[in-house]
Image (cartoon, rainbow over all chains, first blue to last red):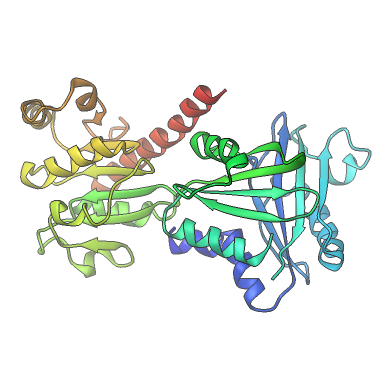
Length: 110
Length: 234
């Protein structure tokens, strides 16, 4: 991996943040329907302060995932989030491309 | 995900080994597995198939819903020849996410000043490649025009299944290269996989433009390979 790529790699960042003693949550795209901006397997890493790196969409739903991450960091219980134009919250966090995605959100534990 | 699994995964990725992580969606327990390891018998089929296809998937293992993620090594570019085109490639390829290695035994060309920031090995490909094997996640571009330097790595790249093998040179140069490779026993199928003349036809004239044409051709080979393999897996 090039240094440029490593500095932006969510999994390297997750490990580094954890080593620094920061609370860390990891989000992963586990399923997509229709046109989705990021492929299955993509990661977003979030710390306890709401700092983040990586992406699970083209910037459409990251805000909502970061909001949920605080709960997952507090409870340690993973959850599966679903986003799409069919959601009643679509006006807030829908995917403008018309796709749907499911995101697995978990805490990184020692 | 637990830290030991995350560390194991990151170490495998740094060592260019393909890895799989099985995530239990209800408990959050994650287990990392590296290619060529022994996998648990009851999970072996699912893990091996995911490694083969390179496609993450949802599955049920031990009656529990899981997400199986797969991490293939990032693409690598090995360039034979520390020439002017290579200097431009050395600046472009890292931006596109390629690990890059340059090999050239001619120490007048292979100087650190000309190639700051990328891996540069001033040795013969015959000496370097056995210790740093090519693989199917690697592209090889041979740009010295010198058969003494280029021919061995071209053959090694075809043998290793590199996703891209390109060779610089005029049609005449390539015709004599094909004759030598044929005489050495390479199949027509293998010889046909060599991209020559190298680079997409964008009318590139300067070394930097040729570098862009070569990099674009490499990206095309990488992404079309993904599409071909998805087609096969579907």
